[in-house]
Image (tube, rainbow, N blue to C red; front, top):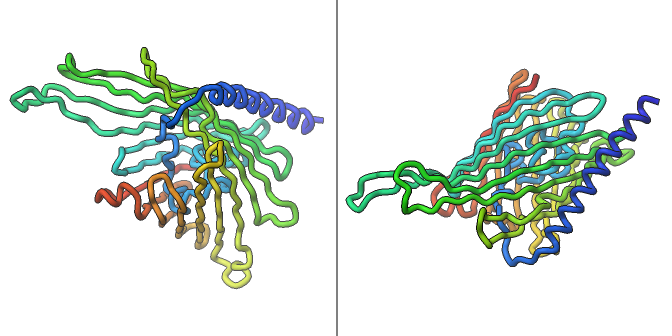
Length: 330
């Protein structure tokens, strides 16, 4: 009886989430535009995600799943506090996340994402610094994931985002502004019956209202993406080497109109559940990146991951794109 009530509660909660997503989607579709705003929503978060070529739709990556498929946190068993840092030619990114699983009702997470484009000095005619311009993107995300039965996982994220340009010092001749919007992601994962090693996933990300500049007429639609993928554990390896596990994953990503689809492939090889070696390949990435590698080390409750990509705008400009994650389970 208790299980039935819990199942009904979770199903009702996700029905409300999907209904909200549909309402926001209709609002966005009713508006026409030729370009996307808030493209920072497409930037990857987390070194583990980057290391497998961002092929994460069917993966369960703890707090990193918040940004690829929120269903990935539904079956998390331990609490997690995480910091994810990135350095690219575009900006420096820092994400703080807290994930809290509650056995009877699901998993909750709260995240703060700051993308800093760097300070730009203001000088007087003589070249003396008199102020600083501060362009930043700020995002707050609340996520909920739940396991429905033994195989189905569902997830939902609500995001508040703002792009703002502030100024400190003598700013009389500097225009400051902010542009804000809200968005939702929702996704699902399903473990295939008869083969516990195979999982499929799907997610729709960044469904929301246009990014609107305060007191301005300009507004751009958010970069909505539809993503499907699979993840497969190579259990055959354990028949020969018991200390090694390996998973492979692949995703297909497209816009709502299915234009310019891209593909991602990745693998994660683990030794004694401690050392991770990762690699990935990306086809038609918006940034132009072609490949990725990553390394991870888990010691007790602490996990450290590092990754980088090859090719793309950052590398072409001489700035090695680097991603570092530090996670603590408790």
